[in-house]
Amino acid sequence: MAGVSYFTRCEDVFMENQPKMNRWLVVVGAILIQLCLGAIYAWSAYTAELTKPIEDGGLFGFTSTESQWPFSVGLLTFAVVMVLAGNWQKKVGPKIVSMTGGIVLGLGYILAGLVGKTLIAQILLLGVVGGAGIGLAYVCPIAVGVKWFPDKKGLITGLAVAGFGFGALIWVKLAGSWGHLIETIGVLQTWMAFGVAYLVAVLIGSIWMVNPPDDYKPAGWEPPPATEAAATGAVEFNQWQMLARPQFYMIWFCFIAGAMAGLMVIGVIKLFGIDALQETGLTAEAAAATAGTAMAVFYALANGLGRIVWGIVSDKIGRKMAIFLMCLIQGVAMLTFFYVGKYTMGLFVWSAIIGFNFGGNFALYPAATADYFGNKNVGVNYGWMFTAYGVGGLVGPQIAGRFRDMAAEAGGYGAWLPPFVIAGIASIIAALVILATKKPKLAE
Image 1 (cartoon, rainbow, N blue to C red):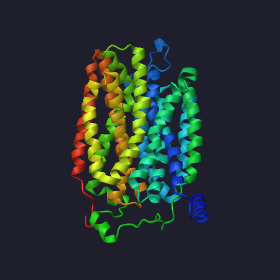
Image 2: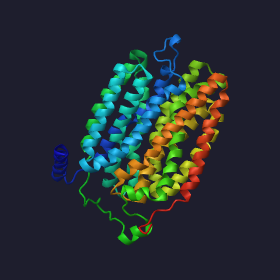
Image 3: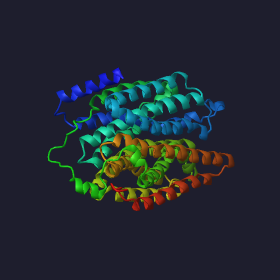
Image 4: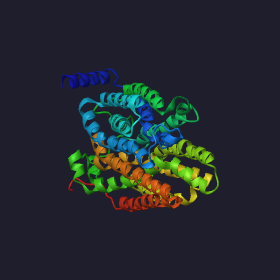
C-alpha cells in the first residue's frame, strides 16, 4: 500500500505542476501505446509458418485449429484482465497500470522468442502473459481520454484506439514484406525483437496517461443539466449497478457478435484467402501473397480508419443508430464473404469492409458505455463490457479454424461457408437488439 500511495502522490504532484497540460498529448500517448497493443492482430502473419508441416521444413507443424489457440487465449486473457485493470487504475492511476502492461507485454514476447517452440509455451507466453499485458494497458488511454474529452467521446475513443488497428499493419509488414523479419531471422527471433519494441514504446506513451483534475471542463463546454441527465439516462452507475441492468447485457451481446465476426476473419483471413483464390485458378504462391496483402493492407488500414470514422459518425447520429448500421453492414458482408472472397478484388474490398466495421466496435462501445452508464466509472465499466471481446475472440477464430481443418480433411472449400454464415446472422440479430435498447434511468 505504501508503494501505491507513493505513485498516487507522484501523479497528484504531476497534475499540480501541469494544470494546463494540452489534452491532445493524451491522444499522442494513447496512439503510441495502442500501436503496440495491436500486436495481437498481427497473428495472421505467423499462421503460415506455424502450420507448415515439419516434413516440409516447418519448425512447429501445428494444425490450423492449434495455430489459433495462442491468438484465442490472448484475446480472452486480454478481455478478462481489462476488468482487473479498470479497478486497479482507479486506485493507483492510469500511468502505473499502463507502464505495467507494457512491461508484461514486452516480456511475454521476449520469452516466447527464447522458449516458444511448443504450443503450450506459445499459449502461456503469447496468450496469457502477452494478453495480460495488452489488457492492462488497453483500458488506460480510453478511461483517460473520455475524462479529458467529455465533449468529443466518439471522436476521442476512435482516435485513442485507432493505433490498435494500424498497429497490425506495421507489425505484419515488418514481419513480412517491409522488414522480412520472419524470412531472415525466423518467427522466434521476430517475437523477441517485437517484444523489446513493445516494452519501450508503451513506457514512453504512458508518460501522458494522467487523469485531469476532478473539476476539469474543456473550454466552452458545459455538462448537461442534472434534470436532463436524469431524463436521458446519462447518470453515473458503478460496476455493480451497471451489471444489474438489462441494457448492459443487450449491448454486451451486440459487442460479442461484432467481435466474433472481425476476429474470425483476422485469425484465418490468410488461410481462407489462399484456399479461396486457388478456387479461381491462382497458384498457391500468388494466393498467399494476395491474401497477405488483404490482411496487412486492406483489413488493417480499414480497421484503423473505422475506429475514427465510426466515432465521428456516432457523435453526429447517436451511438445507437451508429451501432445498428455497423452491425447490419457487417452481417451482410459476412454472409457474402465466402462468395466474393474467391476473387482478388472481392477479397480486398470485403476485407476492408469487415475490417472497417470491426474497428468501429472499439470506438462505439466504450463511448456507448459512457453514454449509458456515465463517464466517471468508464474505466471499470468498460472493462466488464469488454469481456464480450474475449468471448467473441474465443468463439470466432476457433469456429473458423475448426471448419478449415474439416475442409482440409475433406478436400472441400465449401467448409468455409458455415462460420461466415454464423457470424453474419449473429451480426444482423445484434443490429435488431441494439434498436430495442434504451438508456437506463435512475428509477430502474
